[in-house]
Image (cartoon, rainbow, N blue to C red):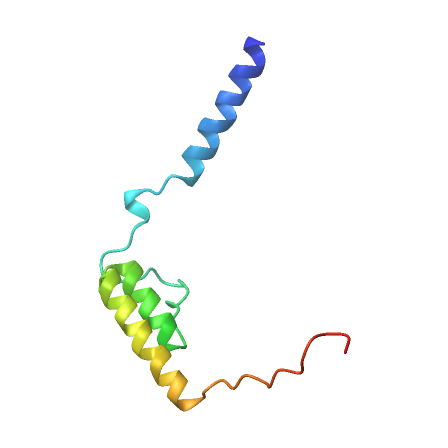
Length: 91
C-alpha cells in the first residue's frame, strides 16, 4: 500500500513540475521569442468583446451592455419572423 502511494505521489509531482510555468519561459512585455506563433485575433465583434473581458479591459457590466446593443442592432438588421401556427399536430 505504501509503495502504491509513493509511486502515485511521484507521478503527481512529476506532472506538476512539467506543467508549472517558469519565469525564464515568459517573454518580456511586447516581445515574442523567435519562431513563436502569432497572437490569435478574434474575427467577430463578439470575439473582441470576450477577449477584452477576459483580459480585464472592460468590466462585466460593459460587456453585457455591449452585447445588448449588438443584439438590438442584429434585430434591426435581420429580424426573425415566426412562422404561422399550423394548428394542433395530427389534424
